[in-house]
Image 1 (cartoon, rainbow, N blue to C red):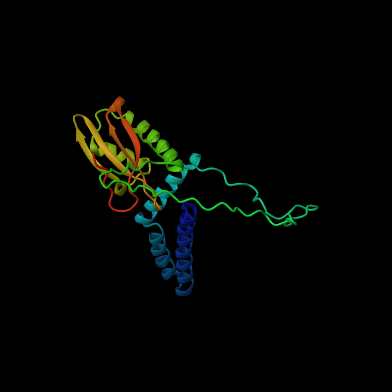
Image 2 (spheres, rainbow, N blue to C red):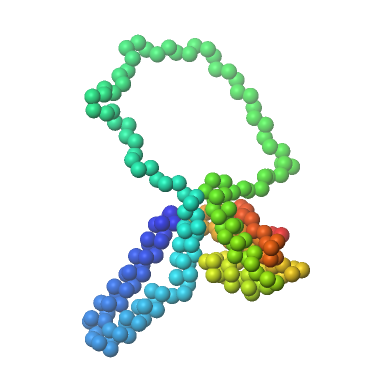
Length: 215
């Protein structure tokens, strides 16, 4: 499922809740109408649902410059008017009479060889740069940062508390990590808020399993 389809589904669910609330009110009268409408509004605007949708919308907005525009027209294999499709040749194609060569056996990797660390590629690499720049810009201006202030800044940028990990203060700086994995992605951030020396970088985290940014 793409991010746009997920957001469309979430919007449709909210409209369905609102429609059900209105029907209940018409059937039961004035007082019942107000009660059902209020309950429906609370259900449609639950903090958990809103936070999740807002997070996905923020990801789509920040990553928009990294997504290529879809092609305007699709190419067709059908011949253009006036053109004849290619015909089969009159003479049979020559057959390669040379005997097949023996394939050399491939060498299996040594068990002692270490696997290369995962790296962000393509769109996720671009999105990582966009997120890193906006987070670094927001945290650079913090004078004497604390874990609480860094958490609030990240929340205001659209990164909910459930996505922020590893907040800890060390020698006047605050370390943190942000889990941006969605729909099988590997994008994550880690950084240090330290005034003018603030640094934030994107990295690839395994798509499955608990978020463990490490050091």
